[in-house]
Length: 212
Image (cartoon, rainbow, N blue to C red; front, side, top):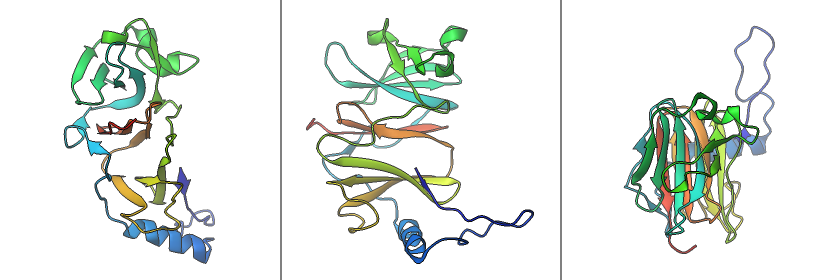
């Protein structure tokens, strides 16, 4: 995660430009000027928009034992849910998990027990309690979370090692989500590289591709 901030004297309002180099200022302005745009092909939004999940705490990935498709497990204040990352369908729900399994911080590896088709397995969860997701794929896609205007996060998707420091927005990198209405939780790819997810405290946004 990238964040730029200046250091102000005690009791003074921080100056967001204090201590930033010309290069950093130009980079910040470049990121602030980039509008939110759709993710490029082959990425497609699942269900066309985000899925509302109130009180979302974290997310994790699993694989369907029959189809091999990516699954997304969601942990929230209202329990656990499991989504098909290809269709967006909620395929399992546990509204009242056992107290020792309700949140990942109860486990040494930040995991929660699976449900539905992955019952009997554990899924590592990234979000409020820590952890992380894959930030890149084997074929060169990268996701980065930046904060040019704290505290809201912007999620950037790039390919072939492109970074927002260079290249044209909409050609080699894309600002695909601005988390300015809810608290950011996690962003990243599934281990297969076929699914990209962004989670905030109120919703889940999914993109999927079929090229592996």
